[in-house]
Every structure is written in structure tokens, then in C-alpha cells.
Length: 269
Image (cartoon, rainbow, N blue to C red):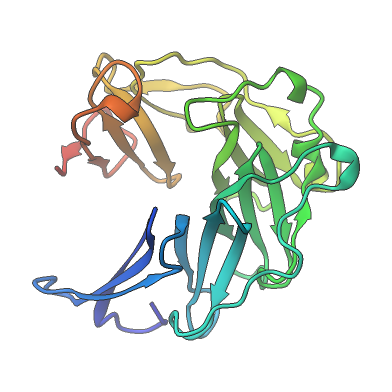
């Protein structure tokens, strides 16, 4: 939403059949649906970047025939622009982008900076608002890469977190290679640091207050598979799935919210 008083709510939804924008007033009793954008195509991530005067939409579009790309819109989705050249590993890597999983705008004050995570596990950076992209070799050429193994969804960079207290640090989660600390040196080519520790499913929710150096369990003993944990550095949110094996066989999703780093949370649905 643009800066100033919020008068409406927007929900951006990416699906296997395109992207949709749901809009409502603050009462949220009725919704207007705009879409599908990219009809018939997989949209793995659909976000709004509000750092500019008007929000910019970014969609990670994946097509089995035409490949994957990040499209951007400066007019609310009325028109879209692809990247210039896509998100491509350099030729000497021996890697080729299969699909794009995650798009993360840079911090406030980092005009034009965005990051993206792809399959096979790779991190890319743009410094011109998403028009062109380059590899972050400190992660993509990591010396342990040959030992990385894919999870159920593939070998993917699915989460990118920017540390708001230290602009030199960001955290990148790879299924199923672990979590890596990528500093500015890593973006320049030095190897990223793998955060130690191994957690097996079924898992609970954990919290760290010291840049992931150590961990404390939250909700220990909850039966389920946690599909994603969104760290906000002032709290924790989790979305566990019921069931003991793969999320593909889970009958329903459960979403919880925690207002602080405590072993309490509220079930949302």
C-alpha cells in the first residue's frame, strides 16, 4: 500500500493457474478479485514492494515451456515487464535455473535492490529494480554444494531474511541443505557461512536471539511438519501442518501466531 493512511487491504495470491489480487476495505466483508495475471502459469511468489512512492508488484512466474522469470508491474498489474535476460547461472557453473521460488525486496534505503531464490539452490541479486540479475557466488559456489540434497520440493532457496540490525548480514534457507549466513563479503564471492545445527521432522518452532548462534525450542512436542517459519526478529510466526510425513498428505493446515519470543501462541485457523 502507498504511504499514508491505509484505506484498503490487498492480498496477493500466487497459484498454479496464475496470480490474483484481492482488494477490500478495512471491514473485509467483501472482496474484489483482479486476475488471473499470467493465466495458466505457475506463480510461486507474488509480492508488493512499497519502498517507492507507488508499490511495485513482483511475480515469480514459472512456465514448463517458456522457462522462469520475475515480472514486475508499476501500475497495479495493468502491464508487466520481464527481466532482461532472466535469472541465469554463469556458464562455468554447470547449472540451469528450473524455477524461481522467492523474491525479497532490499531494505529501506537500498533503492532498486532485490534478491531472489531459485531451484537448483541459488541466490540472485538485482540492483536496478528487477531488470537484470546476477549470481551471489558466495552461496551458489559454496564448497559444500556437492553434498547438498533436495527436499520434497527440490533443491531450493525458499526463504531470504534480511537482518534489520546489521545491514551486512542476511540469512538464506535451502531445502534441504540448511540455513546460511550471507554477508556482504559473501555477495562479493567469499563463501557464505552455514549455520550449525540439524533438526529432523517432525519439528517444533524454535527461536534465536543471537543471530542463530544458539536456539531455544518453542512449542516442543507439537506433532506436525512446519512448512515455513517467518522470522520478524521481534517475534515469531509459524505455519505447521498436521501429519507426520510430507505436507502433500496432510489433510489441513493450521496457522499460529506469536506476538513475542515466548512459548505461547494463538491458533488462527
